[in-house]
Amino acid sequence: MALMTPEQFEDSLKALKPRVFMNGKKVESILENRNTRTVVEANKASYEWALDPRYKDIMSCYSPLIDDVVNRYTHVSTNTDDLVKKAEAGTFTAEMLGTCIYRCVGYDAFHSLASTCWEMDRDLGTEYHPRFLEYLKMIQRKDLSVAGALTEPRGKRSQRTLDWPDPFLSLKVVDKNADGIVVRGAKINISGAFASHELVVLPQSAHGPGEEDYAIAFAIPTDAEGITYVCQYSPYSAERDNADELDELGNPRFGQRETSMVIFDNVFVPWDRVFHCGETKYSVKFVTRFAKTHRMTCGGTCKVGFMNQIIGACKLIQEYKGLDKVTHINDQLTEMVVLRETGRACGLAAANKGQEEPPGSGVYLPDELMGNVAKLNICNSFWRAMALAGDIGGGLIVTMPSLKELKNPETKDYVTEFFSFGSDEPTENILKVHKLLQHWTAGQHGVATWHGAGPVAAQKIMLQRVVDFEHDKSIVKQTLNLKEKEKKKN
Image 1: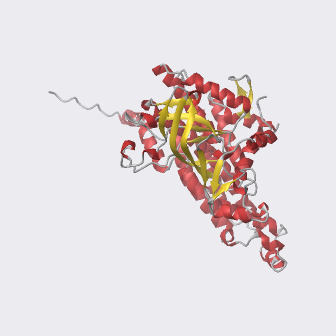
Image 2: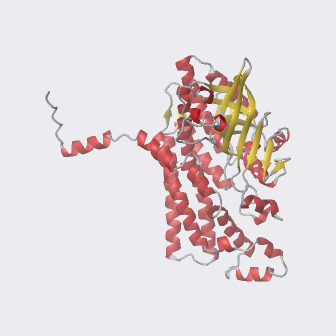
Image 3: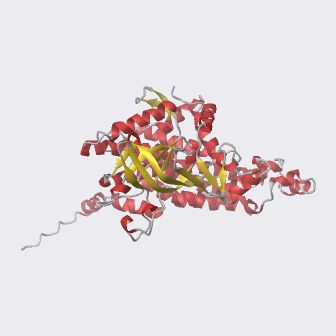
């Protein structure tokens, strides 16, 4: 099998030397830094699960490209069953990690690349598709983790790209030669790239005539010369840096979602890794095909897994406090279950209604209508679930003392007595569950859910483009036997 072990994955990262900065300092080792280590652990878990007999049907699949079993996160869907398994994997990884699986954006980008490269070759006579397939075969055989990069800093939205004072606010080709291209610019809000082997880059947006140098897609090793990662740093990062023991944290092993800005300072990309270069008409197809795939992921799969964790924590707190029969809490839990299952239903509908796009490509993408509905629905649902969790958990979620107090001889007995709620549950367990809800309700995943895969406005715009009201109008006309309008006489 073309599957790497968790130990092999970690060893493979030791051979990489990405240039990473966090909190104003250089990160000398992503394996040893406490915050970057969470990304290593999240990706590492995906290698564990693919080899685990309990989870291998979710996390691995057969690839006809190399005639072998591969990690699902290196696969391109070729039928609706693949899309359903993709959705199930998204929920599974989210509920197991309690944060992002950093291979998902690269996974979704593969679908956009396979589809659009095939179409460009058909229409333009280019040779991108076989080039991409050779790249994907290499990824599958080596079982590499691949991050995806789309979002760019960008200039004023009221101006065209060509009118920006700084032309590098969108990633741009600055040189071409017989060996490849050189790019300069940046991608922002990129999840977990520094702990992956490869980075796949897609266009940020549609491009028009004169913007050929911005119409680019390619793949590059994450430690290629000229690439620098400037990481986020939040109060949760500082807390992890200063924790005596990681068990004190809301998600000890996998942490909060970790992102970075990826800077490309005259980075050379050889031609065999370039999948789009100057064909402006097709930039928008890379974007929209990625979006419909990723919105199914963000809307109907991973947030469902997150809500499983939130609901589980709320149910435990209800039991700890002896509130099992309190009507309004049971109603709140029921509402959270409805929100979760509505998200799951939208995601599975997007998968089951998926189609080959474009016809003949062999690539299956989720249904665009349901994919956007899934993401738009989950934006509001997840905020609501967090609000309900905050109400059930109570003020202790944000006022709780540090778990260090349980080891402080001067406060241990007080904390143990007054935060046990008369339960025989260890106080440490009670505080840890509240800390987990702090991770969710006061952490970074709310805003990340709203903006990941595009903010609400983006989904609404896409829905307004794809919804066809003709059927709805026709059934009303049929029901009422409405008369046809008379044609005006000249």
